[in-house]
Amino acid sequence: VKMAGKGHHRFFQPALFETIRHRRELEQALVTALEQDQFLVVYQPRVDTQSGLLCSMEALVRWQHPLHGMVPPLEFIPVAESSGLISQLGEMVIEKVCQQMARWKSFGLQLVPVSINVSARQFSRGDVHLVLASALARHAIEARLIEVEITESAMMDEQNRTLEQLAAIRALGVRLLVDDFGTGYSSLSQLQRFAMDGLKIDRAFTTELGRSEQGEVFVRAIVSMAHALGMSVVAEGVETQQQLDMLRTLQCNEIQGYLVSRPVPAEQMLELMLKRRLL
Ligand code: C2E
Ligand code: CA
Ligand code: CA
Ligand code: CA
Image: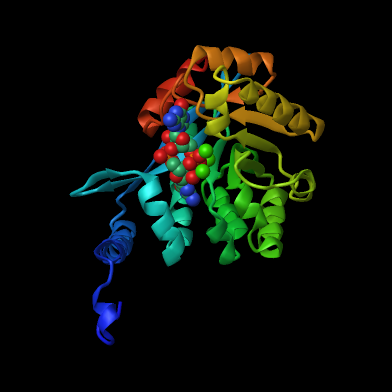
């Protein structure tokens, strides 16, 4: 940041300056973190609302900083995205997930699909499908056991490039889910064009269930639309039994949320896999 020059430039906003410096430091720390392998992946179960059985899980990245402790993803994912480090970070997550799945498999556990979050910015490098294919092959994991979650906004960004990679990912046999559904502007035609297999209703709508009539109306509409298009529906952020009861009535296929479990390290996930019945 240039601070010299004309008089009024000296009266820069301290908060902004702090932010920029913090951002630079964060970027540098992220580079180090990648080199030193300071990341880990935690898993949150998804449960079939009809059977009550574990049916899949979401992989969520965590940064274990040696000094600052656990840094939540919302504090570093945006920095990784804007600095271009997201592709490397994303590749590391894919690698760790496949490695973990191979480990579970070696224990004789029955694997369930794991979904991985992929940011819009990861598609700009153009090789997400190759990264996935390579990790799946190296760890001998079937493609049907991996799902990719992308936000509605990712479907809008750089449409052609993203579309090509999504098609290639799907051609591998990996399922595609729309994340945070309801917060963006995707249209029915886009959901079809991108051949999405399922969608995850954003937590904001789950929270409205039982609080307002609007919540119920919205979820009912999403479920019927999704089912008409042959997509399955997951509700995120389910925290109460009342929400679960309503989601069951509304025929939502799966739930994910603190009601069942917080995201947990792989060792704890193993116990949930053995238990299987989570509702
Ligand atoms: P998301 O994909 O929408 O993930 C769901 C978030 O909701 C997670 O936050 C999860 O811990 C939290 N959550 C789950 N159940 C409940 C609940 O019942 N109540 C409440 N209040 N929260 C719940 P988390 O792990 O902090 O991740 C935040 C966001 O960071 C994710 O939102 C995702 O957008 C991003 N993220 C996480 N891991 C990755 C990753 O590996 N790659 C990329 N690109 N983004 C990631
Ligand atoms: Ca997600
Ligand atoms: Ca969400
Ligand atoms: Ca999200």
